[in-house]
Image (cartoon, rainbow, N blue to C red):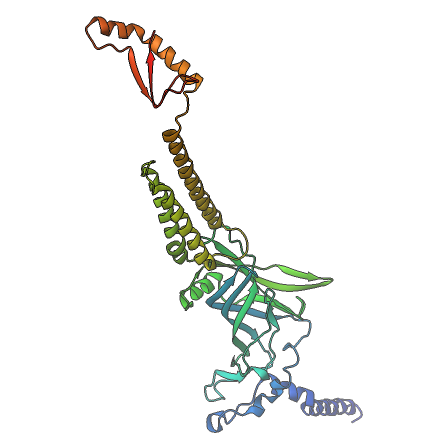
Length: 403
């Protein structure tokens, strides 16, 4: 009997400890938290009280161990390119942002819950990652009342629409054949890499293909490609995870080719063909002046289509075309002046031209004499209209005698 007391005491102690552990409220709460009791859902519908323990934790990051970071996967769809403002360097687009993460406090058995594998829960009742766009230059106007999809394993999918006004470094030198490369950087505002890690839910080429097929606007810009990088942001001693997407877009130049380049080319071509007009025509200079005036009015009317900042190459082209038309007009005016001067006041022959002609006549004297001996007309008498001896004003006809 004395040898059996220690054995009975140990047995009673184990029984007492097991009873205490079964009645422990912490373990009971833990068991209720990790496995939601959804009995009766198939008969009476969903019961909010079954998820109340999860909703009460929405202010805290959903992890069992606080030292384990939460992994949030990111995906988005670019559905519209609304505006590209070169003056203030701003890109306005519309995207659908998708966030994916796991909540270990949500799980249930679909067989016990009437075959329910996925639920739609109001996003206000769940913990949401604070993902924002670094280049965002406006306040967040995300609509309220959004929902999130939660499956039986605690995997959450949250999708929200966003009108993004993001800053972008725009280079308009090759306007209207320019391509722009803008960035969308997703990062967390509060959580460092010790608390949150960012990942990709889809491949980048899938995001680019989906966005290219879903873009509804057939406006000025089209999507070329989307690439990504995963830099880290260091703020003092804190390190933040980031995902940067490089969105390449291209301008559709058809509008500017039809309204700017083609009319300008026609006007320049007509101005070039005006050189075939005879110099003595009285309509040559007025015609060029009319072309110049029309080109100036054309530039004033089309000024709204040009970028208001920077100096694009097309602006240099228009300035060059305008300069050529001005030079063409000056050429017509100068030729008209010379023609009028020659017909009204014939100038004397320059001394160098007179000497050149005399040398030419001496060199051909032998051939002239040979022609005379053969009975040809006397070539010694040469008429040069509009020329005269240096210093001698003999009228419009000058007679030179070869020696």
